[in-house]
Length: 327
Image 1: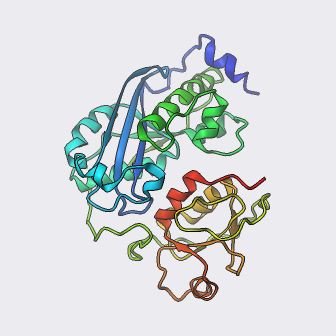
Image 2: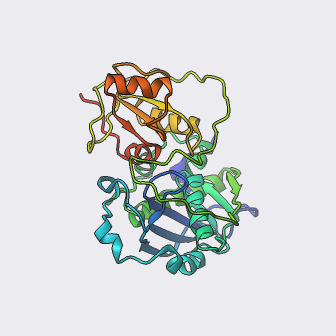
Image 3: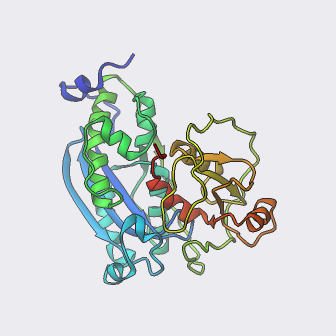
C-alpha cells in the first residue's frame, strides 16, 4: 500500500539510485494530432533530479500553415506570422532537452510531434527517454476522476491560469510532477520510462487544412477484439455544432484509418464523458473520419442523416475542452 502522498511529497526522501538525474517537462500546442500537423508553441521547464525547477523557456512557432482550432489555443495566423520557424528554435529547444528525460502529459504525443519537427529540420532531438505523467499517476494509483491535466493539477492543489497555453500547461505539469516523483521515490515505485526513437527521414506532403484532413498516409489500424466500456452516464445533449465545444453525453462514432491508435482516441473520448458509438444513427452527435468522401457505411449514413463530420485533428483539439453535461 502506498504511503500518504502528501507526506511522501513533503518529507525528506531517500533517493533511489536508478532514478534520472534531470527532467525536461514539456508541453507543445499544435495545429492538430495527425502526422502532418505542426507545433505552434512549445515550453520547457527544466527540473533537477528531485523535481526542483531550474529554469523555463517558451516560444511560439510559425507552422507555415493554417493554425488549426484557434478557439482552443488562441494562436491566430496573425500572431504566428512573426514567430520563428521551428528550424530557427531547434538548437535552443535541443539544449533544453539534452541529457534529460522528457516528461509530458500523454508523452507519446508530445514526443512524436517533436521528433517530426526535428526530422523536417534534418536534425535529431537529443531525447532518449520519456515519462508520461498519466502512466505515473496510474503507477501511484492516484484517485483521479479522469486523466486530464486539470484533474492531476487539482489533486495536488496546483492552480491553472491559462489552460492550453504551453508555458502555463508546462508549469502546471512541473508542479504536479514534483510531488508525484517524490511519492514514487518514497515508495520505491519504478518510473514508467520509455525509449524515444528519433525519426531520421522525413518527406513533406501538402499541408492539410483543419477539418479537411488528407486521407492518404494514415497507418492502417490493426484488427482488435471489441472492448466493452462502461455505459456513458450522461444523457445525449444532441448534435455537435460547429464552433462550439463538445458536451459530455454526445454520441461520437469513428470511421476509417487514424494516425493515433483508434483505441487511444476512443479511450480519450470516453474519459472526457462522451458516448463512443460503434454504429451511426440519427442520434449520433458527431462522426470523426479522415476521409469524408469515402463510401463507408458510417459516412454514407452521416450524409443521409446530416450528421456533423470532423477529422481526427479537429476532434483531438475539441477533446481538450469538453463542456460538462447539463445539470
